[in-house]
Image (cartoon, one colour):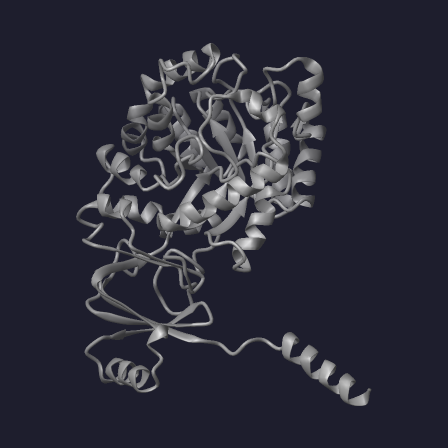
Length: 435
């Protein structure tokens, strides 16, 4: 019996002990350490326990000795040769909905169990990572705890996917974009998210509730939206007092606020309330832009979303109320970047994936460049710029010692041609190879 107890104790100790850190190596033909830096030539990237620890010039004696040692130890499984590729930091999408796929069938909200949304989220996490996006901000889950659970599963390596930063459920006004509508009252009530509010006190309470259940940030629908069944326009939904209460309460809890906003006056009001990011910004004008700059608010333009929804016009994919809104925004959405550049508004990368198919996120780069951004600025918006929005500028967005080993590789140079980012050939997230 004593011997069995000793064996059990030893086993428990081994399980509790951290695994020995494994060192792996990636050989790159070119390394873009960050969008605004001069690329490095052939480089050996040294990664230990999921973090970058060194960048060695391939022709250095240290790099050559390292590779020779791996060959001698028959340890080439820890070595990836990307000598014909450009290696760069993993991309960040600041606006995704991993638990949803494109659909005009709004009634599915009343028939789909949360377990199914969880499976959809796991599927889309893998697809998103394979597309080169190693971190995402998820702004509105289809069910409670879906993306919070996915955040944990990807962090622990149970599910292949990106690092997940989640808002959980969206906070909305009663009957507004983000609330359930389109059904008879008893059904609306039964499947409501529980995150609608009226008045500053109730809205502050919903922020505390979101924090209680694991939100990393707060998402609100500051204006009407395009794909919901509500037909009350695309301008301001919350009162100024309600939005101020949301932002101030979030600030007390160490959380930032992302505001879905289409109409210009709704954008302006949300910025004046102090939100951190404006999502979409469809009708941004000079007054709205000025309010954003004064508040330090960043625009997340989600251009791919507008492209995605336009493809389904006239196909009876959407209900008449939604189709009418799509037709309205389609006339102006193509110029969001031009106006933002003209008004000198800070821009970061986000796509609204889920409105269009997951995995096509990198199409946003071409739309940004076509709108007037340089290739370097577009890439920075999805790396260093996006990392700063998340408060993770010392963790992701660069290839440098101490940073998480979130690495992708492509053929060609995205600083010359951003379309190469639509065909990612190698993906590493937190030191784990996904592709």
